[in-house]
Image (cartoon, rainbow, N blue to C red; front, side):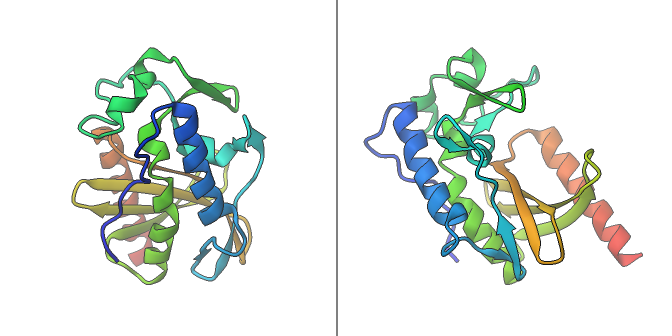
Length: 196
């Protein structure tokens, strides 16, 4: 499989139009029963609770929680930086998820098309995709897929529902060095537990 590329948003310059296009891609690739992938033979359930005319799971993947340590923009050195107007700093266009205000992020949104191919790569044991499990604070087992290739570092989070089903939780590019280290530690710890 060739290298992943973001959704083409050429000609779009309003955040609303970009989010509409990205949500359409998300619906086609993850919410459509005919097109969405399976996870090693298991059905992937995508909760379709609607918020501002879009799936809440899309919004989680296409927004960012403002953090005090945000000392570098996720879209730094990316074409999307010319379109967003530093929204994650200025907090000028947000969405509220689970009572937490999150800033809409074009950088994250144009990468929702990566979710399906990364899951498909994992299904065929592609070496670019690491897998691990970890119990989340809600006491449910979370499943993590981390795709790494050159400058791309992207995480998909699923949750076990049953022997035949998993639930899509979120997906996003990883850019904080601390998060990269934490995920690598989680992966290494899982490998150690698995081999013990």
